[in-house]
Length: 112
View 1 (cartoon, rainbow, N blue to C red):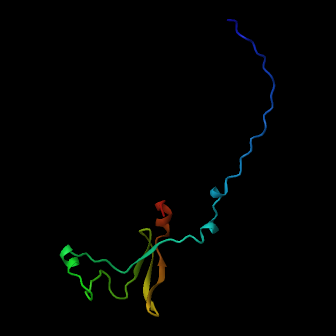
View 2 (view 1 turned 90 degrees about the vertical axis):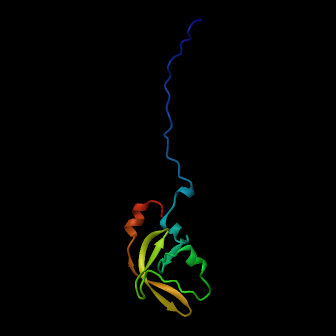
């Protein structure tokens, strides 16, 4: 079978332009302003034996590892974000932020 010869032809290509990213990929900081994040405030920790837990009743007192007036930890997804003091406003507990501690930890964790 004989090889067919073709002649090279000159061609011009259109400029390839970067397409606009879909809106879901154009996220701006203000888009996150309404996102709710779970903050946990840790008043203290207690380690108890299973027997002690099973003996808990209404009115039982559980000792925590913090002293009255000591700063409490504020955590975002388990990462220490800040420390604050517990305050009572009306009938509910609140935490007044005294120091922001975990900003560099959050930036480096990658999953916050």
